[in-house]
Image (cartoon, rainbow, N blue to C red; front, side, top):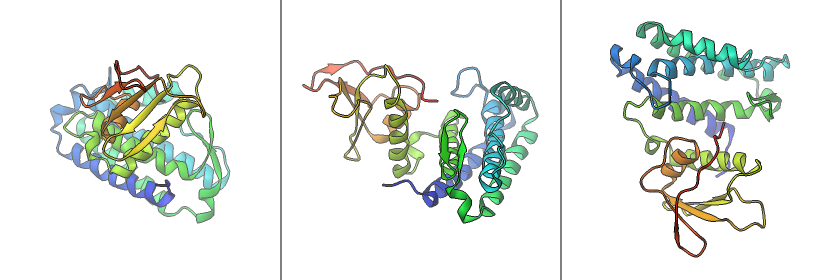
Length: 245
């Protein structure tokens, strides 16, 4: 499946609703509990989600006007805003997540069609088409819904989005030096991806349902259903992959 703007926008909207539902079911005391991300509480995750919505609004402004407006002023300010935001009362965090998400949706709706074909730079400094903004937001919503650690999992994602996520991460890793040559096989989708350079055989195949592959390549643990084998079919330890972003 080819990732389109329409699909990315739909995934982002569905992901925002999914995460908001999880947040609404959290009691106030749950905000201070640890999330699945080391060093972050659930309040940190939700504060990040709100600041990310503002970051996407900045990138949309860039695409719409041509005025360079990076997602974040810098990493230090981004981290400071998340940290200070996490100390607020749960009601303020809930309101922030909803208000920023709604504002982003309004800005998306007002985007001229031609603006989506313009280029912006992502947080990593790469020049990408503005259509990637929708995909970036979709990834944030669904992955951080899992990071809240309140019962959501990669199994909740739309399966086509899981395939796009694996493909995205694998392409990112394949462009880096020193990444193991790994073939990823989705046992439930009959799809294969590889970090190996073209013409280079993989050192190992990692097989799992696509939800488990997506969790693994995005750095969310090593699911129990994942296994690694050599090209000859001999079992091997699941290799370590570098951080994706």
